[in-house]
Length: 193
Image (cartoon, rainbow, N blue to C red):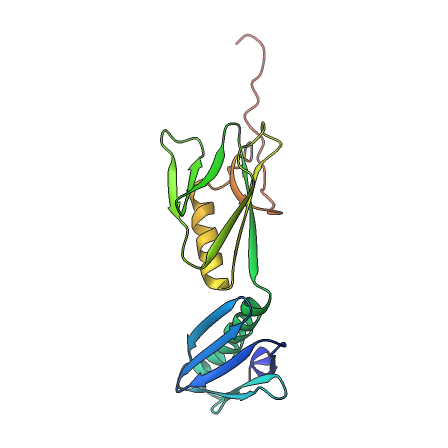
């Protein structure tokens, strides 16, 4: 059996979990999310005790073991998302690089001959703390937030992919706190040949 799958999901106050057939709906103060549960996995929802149990009827099957932990983790993320929410902080390093929000789009100037536009998915919010870099040391910073963890992570990865950090000067888009392994550049010898 999956160790993660056996743990019950705690439902905090103000969050409601409902099941209609295979569809699980979680609603809370920040919004609501839905998930289609796999037919091999059964759920026991106890709103009075504030717990959701994920049950695997055939633990000897390999796919059931995988689904057991995965479904439990997805439900836990949904409960956390509608009660607290998720956020990703992103930094942009590089002289002259910038980001701005305009008409539901993020517009990046990151060293290309043209600006790069990304449409912000519905359900995500953008908060820009500083839109323009100041030299190579002070980055532009913005935060993405939302209730759906998978949507937030996917969009943050797409934003980072526009200009991943390069290893020589560290210029590019990266997550806040991300370590970028640096390489030593070429050393030119001074002297005559």
